[in-house]
Structures are given as C-alpha cells and as structure tokens.
Image 1 (tube, helix red, strand yellow):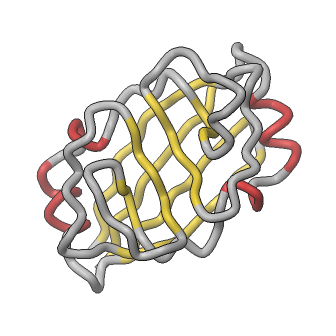
Image 2 (cartoon, one colour):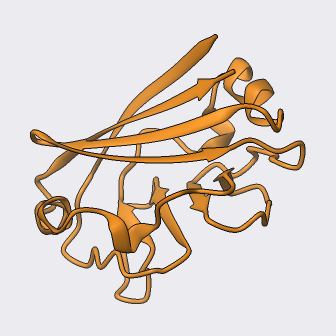
Length: 141
C-alpha cells in the first residue's frame, strides 16, 4: 500500500544545506543565514496540514517514508520511517531526521540522507528565489 502527498515550495538566497543530521522545509517566507538545515521556503504545507491518512501511516514503525525533492530535472530522495511518537502538529515546518528524535515538527526518523547529501546542482538552484521545488512524500507499508 502506498499513499502520497505532493506540494511545492521555493528557493531562497540563504539556502545553505549544511546540517549533518537533518533537512527541513518551511512555510516561512524568509530564511536567516543560521538556518543551515532549511532547503526550501514558502512551502504549501506544514505537518499539521497533512491528510489524516498520512498522519496515521506515519505513526506506524513499519511505514517507510520517502521524501522526493525535484528541482528541474534533478531528483533527490531520502528514505526514513515512521514512529508512534510522530505528532505531525507543526503548522510551519517538516524536519527529516537521521536520529530517532520526535516532536511536532518531525516528518520522519532514521533518514538515510541529510541536507549535506543533497546534490550541489539542486542547492545552487534553490539559492534562486524564483526556483520552484516539487516535493512528494510517499508513505509505504
């Protein structure tokens, strides 16, 4: 069984993508130079906006969660998994974590990739505020 959610976001001149354990999307329009895990701004949704089916699947440990980011013709994919502690309550952010830490902002834990592993070509494109990123979240059982 598979369930997916698609939305878009955009780039920002301050995208750094240098955090070693996470990456994050945000609905915020601005990004300071301290936001080293934020890869896109102006996202169409935060975790609280996710459909109920996505929230249900995310709370099961055997659910594989795939984060697919497409910028132009280049695709970045990270895989993690669900956990009963995933709350999906944050209205602004989605954080993919390599660790097992959960909070209202956590999209998935055990991510096999972090912001440092996003292809340079994508990051350079995302430093242009005119760049539109397409994001697909896939929940697989």
